[in-house]
Length: 232
Image (cartoon, rainbow, N blue to C red; front, side, top):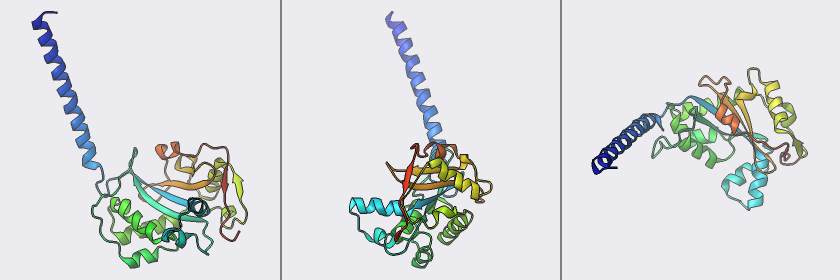
């Protein structure tokens, strides 16, 4: 290759590289315009944590902080609200206001029946609530409405002994008791042995809707253990 030809090829490669960088920058800019913009999201995930599994894992790790004491004390919690999370079709926003508006203590205490740890409530507001586009009171009212829209299957309400169950059976029980819920709108989450959470996808009107990315993260184990509620 002659020197002139080599220079022409080099210029062509440089132009292509610059064009690619500009295209990438344009796409990144378009994504960044929406990324973490409060209220700019596609749907919610209502995450219901199986509290006995949380408490069992905390005990194994030797965690005895205030959150563990509040949730794992004498009251027999079963499913509790972990959070209501704004989502994109791919990925999710978080911490959309830094610093986040301070959460009123009275709002926090009003949610302890559904989310039994003050630290959890404050964290959910900072990380997820600020992305909802709602004020704090409206966001937590939306959590309450979302939770009220879900019926917990009776067989899970007062579990008095450890239960070994297939994740599909948990999904089927929720689908059976919640009209409009489909397998594409629910994901059972587990750790190595135990049920961790049930995640349900809802549109902004709190109706069930499909969510492929959430469903792909579901537990793939054949069976999981549900520890009993405290006192069981």
